Length: 393
Image 1 (tube, rainbow, N blue to C red):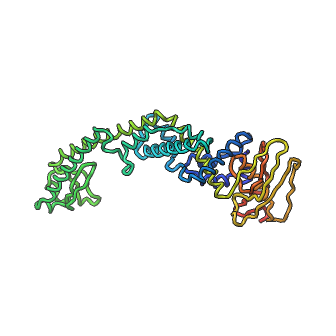
Image 2 (cartoon, rainbow, N blue to C red; image 1 turned 180 degrees about the vertical axis):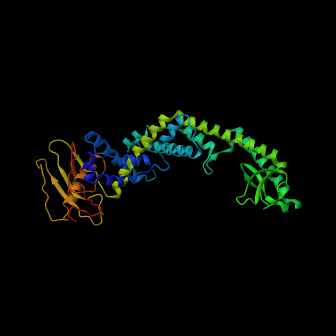
Image 3 (tube, rainbow, N blue to C red; image 1 turned 135 degrees about the horizontal axis):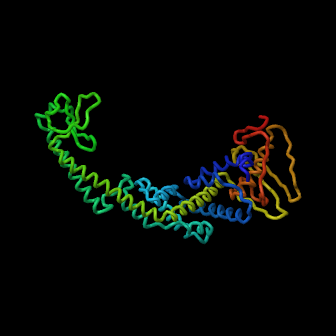
């Protein structure tokens, strides 16, 4: 179906509504790019998938894609050797864990949802990656855990001890009565990663040390007392060792993901496919739509019973009936301005287009659409059904 004909029928607006029922960007992109198929076997397969999803979600509303993200770019970066950060790693873990849970749930329901289970069969059971990220990354603080490696645990223990020593030394300095008059404030702060105390500029040199910064007004100098230089040096050395070990852990986890990048990319693609199917099911339930009978062969008909335009308010829209048999080659529609001619034409075109995209249509039981090669639409001036705009209004 050419894009312009779809725009004329306002199909993209319907697809935006459909996309609002997707769970993540992968499914959203598929929904907004959805096109009718001209292959009856493909349409039948996709309609059957939507039918399975509606039946499944009516009894298992706990099944879904919560926690899924489109992590394909992250997997690609990891495959190129790039290091992923903790939030990225947790996105990977959340997505793979959701995929694992969905796979297991759908495989248990294979008897009643065979098509959905067949898709889920291809999802990557990445328990090793899920467990390793969970072991190494703190989900609450978004940082590498102390016990990710024995080396990191040792470094952080020594770092806490070193921090305690330097702060205790500085507290003793600012607590001395003869230094109080030199201080701008009796506090400990940091400059350039080193702990310092604020000295009044007029008393520069009264507390021997290294000046690391000064206030905007120049009235305060931030001084590292000489007696804490070695302690600060030790602490800084430990901080650098910690950074290197953290990067080692992050790179190790990234490499694990990079090694499985093809499986991860395929899994996200399958999740997007399932997301679209579930979105069709939820959208169909929301607009009270049904799956029309898809007729093939030369005797097929276009029969719409109490059909409604999907962009109009179901509480106020007037349903329409339309019956074109195999001998009917043309339907001439006449009526006054604002009488609903455009709505009828667009409703019929959308019903056919959506059916061939495996999206149920708002119509009553007994509706049927024919097998098609193409949907063509030319309605003259640009019009907008959902905004109540017609050529002459």
